[in-house]
Image (cartoon, rainbow, N blue to C red; front, side, top):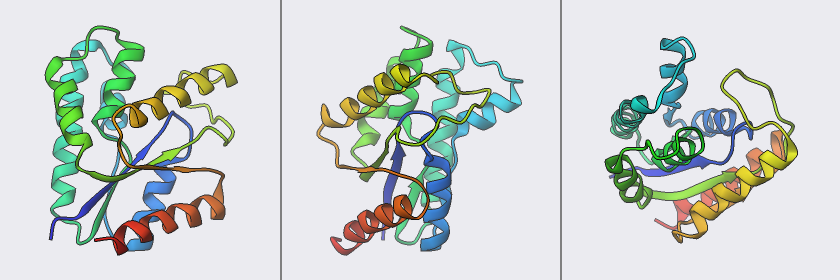
Length: 179
């Protein structure tokens, strides 16, 4: 059986990583961390536009390897559409065309995107750049538009803690029951 892939999606500092880890533990399945975070640390906090292809390849390798370990579902802390969004924000015009094409193709592999919204407080981190409410709202709209303009399946996940987790579990249960 090919496992279902569920992508955690949304702007920075919306709880995606914690939710991915928690869902994976709850379902006894793997989760895919963000390759770019590891890349950032290995390169001493320096990423340039020419790194975008390597980052995309690393994310795809990691996700595909963990998909082979999953039984029913794989939780992805990020995916290539997110890489493209960040490339466009931070390195305009530098995203390789093959990354864009791969992002479009792979986006159809996800059973659902869990769109984590900006209703949680911003937590500073050296990798985060859009901290004001206006910036966060603009990013939120950009992420939401990315899903709606492609007619990708998604559910908005709001709040923190148990409420957020319970809502995400309800979405996952609904998806698992539908297959």
